[in-house]
Image (cartoon, one colour):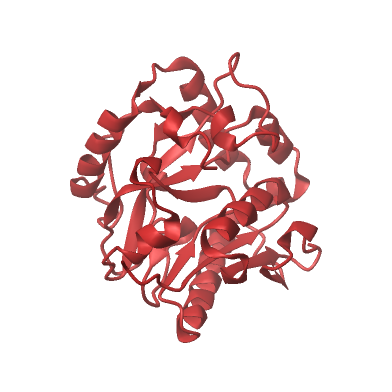
Length: 281
């Protein structure tokens, strides 16, 4: 039997209680709420009631424009991760509030147990799945059921195959997409599920968020929201076959402008999640 490692998860959030509630619920169950660290971006933010038992901090707002603010945000979170290592943590997970790292249920093991069994030099990456909403089949996302009983279609996305799990102090690149100065390693049977653009109503709410628009998020939101179109229009492929091929492809293919990020020949592959995932998130 392996010895469970001491694992923390951290995130920074602004005006996103919907996904943060699920983040706290999920990672709290997998790692323990006492190992979660949530930083609210801006002193106009308040700590939500559902964060009880979590290390929650209100921090002065970081930046006003999306690119500069994102770099500063990840520098801040990298520094917080280094502090957690100094406190005795073995691993630190860094993800956005709408990102959930899950182990394939076929293994019958939880996240903490799975990560405790991995040999991690600097970082470990789950395979990224970017969820959309299949319009005409799937309704508004809610907490009445697990997310994966409401959303079944995801694009295999290189943008979400992130260096999310680190084993030593280092510097995350913007969005946790890479660890600067180090290669990435994709774990088998580990997935990062991104739900940020999996609901048309939430997307419209974000476009109506004056604060987000002032920071320059409009172009980004429109670009990423095409996942809804992919989920609605593209034929869904076999999950096990295509995720296996994607791991191979993303391990060996790299974009010329960033050799420590994965690539996949610009393929747009949508998969349907197997039923075994339904109750996990």
